[in-house]
Image (cartoon, rainbow, N blue to C red; front, top):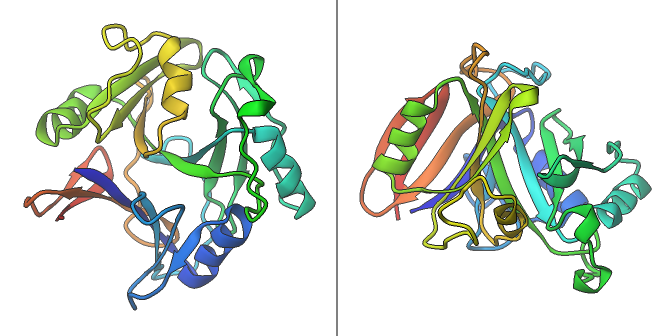
Length: 260
């Protein structure tokens, strides 16, 4: 099992994929006529772009079942300097609680992207940053998170953990902001503190994983709205399994299970 792709409906799939190539150094595959993909490595989770039926501008909705993607890397400040040199509007990086050192930007369609550093800023070590001159952001990166929202975790556990054997790696309670974060992955790895998934020690380890996690923002007091079926928006999540082939929907997010 793996997270195969996050699918987005956009006005121009090729233009969008090329933006991710030019801004983050992703590879582009447009060999299939129905969609164009951007990805960091051949075996990695991909961003898949399909043409939207209408060209309405996407506007982020804090009550939508879809939130963002996250890109993890060694040095957020370096990435921000590189991006601003290209006139990309990026928020000022900051340490958010004992969760991560991060900043945010939007792609050409208005979708939110979070840049998340491997370590807390207080633990940053320049010697650990491997510079990559060929990369527009000066370093290697991973599509670290695909983030969705829900108001009830019971179905989420049953669907992703029990039905498809995704492992819960970290729980990060941010109750003063009204939510809790849960991170699931298709992996056999164990976090440093496998008994206490709320342990802060698990977090920097998680940001350094070479694979994509499914991040769930649990907002119990919100009414989370289903992602619209038309227009420019997130479309669906694709999971790759052994032989199971099915399409489903869980808390407003379409999920396709495809065979290997």
